[in-house]
Image (tube, rainbow, N blue to C red; front, side, top):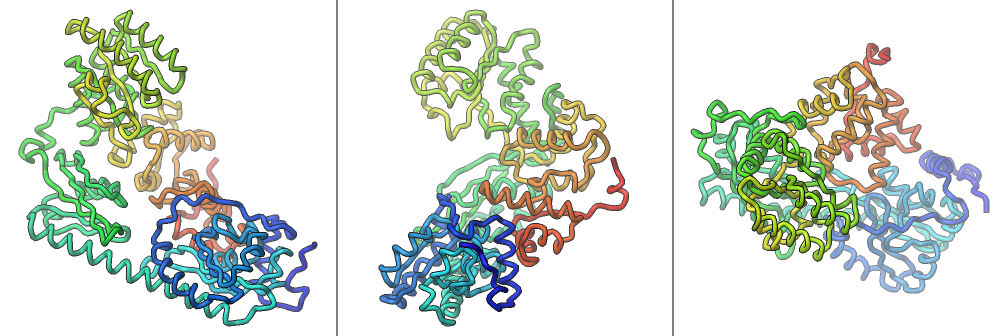
Length: 583
């Protein structure tokens, strides 16, 4: 079956013609719907929670009617499907219009779901207006659902029926359902925000301490927080607090602030029934300011193979040096890529210079090889770094524990020093016999908790890559400091390596940063979303920031590219004449 355009049937609606052109450019199969099956990351979202009672009510309205009511996410993936007539199920299943399948325009061509999301407006697609031949037996009306407060696109509502049953009321009904979901989101948000605000006021009144409230769309700090902490400390506290967003359990953490103060942050979640409204963070100075002024601190020694001078990083270095100096066995905890092993090696070189440090990576060798390397190091009396031991199974960890227990019982005070690295959430329990031999745990902070080290750290990494002639501009540094760095220092290194492959010398400007660094969203993107973000950034770079031309090149509407720029937090500055002339 060949695709004949809407213009061939006398229709001149511009959006429909452009949609068909986008479908052709995306190489959509005109004969077979190419809906991919996607396993949604989570079905418990703001959209699904608000839509549930609305869909239940609307499903009763279409009972015994030959129509289906469908809810999708912002990518067009079907989340919910309600049928007025069960006989319609087989027809919809035959074209994969079912939960888990993605009905984006780039997958199946012009359709009520994907095209309404692409255009950003409610649309009725009658039978022969579909790009795909097998979809022409249906008519569908799609209406986007946006967040009533932030304006973010959350998904779409779609009503689908057989083409012969099509009428204009489909679109009116779809728009009404979308509006009711928005109203439900606003009502639920108001209820959750009121609960969070109530707990916030209670905490401010009864504790007399600095307090922060954090919700999905809310961040509040009381005047005492602003009075006690300067702007840099406030920014650091807020950055630590962001990690608590979405957490449903209480927890406490210590944060080293730029001023030298150590703050204790205690988080308690707020619920409305079983819905998380957010949480309240109580802030308390763990160390008295009079004893923690920067001038009164002994400056940590400069280590040769790591970089950083922030209070957070300096405190970590000091704790690890103290443990190594005392020959106190150490657990280096932290997120992957934070620099745990690099810091252990740097501290060892500084404190125990002349002694051999044997590094054993549990992920690079078989379990038997790991055990053999540990035995060899123990026999030779070498210091030992065991990396990523949480990747070993219980029996192998027990065997290593037995080996190290012999070392503990037979060693003098100048015996070998042993350190292990792990990620606490994946590692053995704190009560495990192996960990009981390690009296000290030092948590190496993620990069997002000491971004003030980023300029120095970037310079250090560039020098190790022999890229000494490359310099980061202030704008580029500011942009990098705004990112969340899920891969930490390893992530930063990979970004700088990408830059080095494209530039050998000169100043790294904002437009020289890879696409992933031009998006400031802290939401973890799916692989497809990352590809879409990169495509938008590259198109903007190619067309010097001209959004209209970039949108045309990508085959999307001008409204869509503006929405994508806002949704992904894409930063772009057009190149100057001078920068265009650079080698």
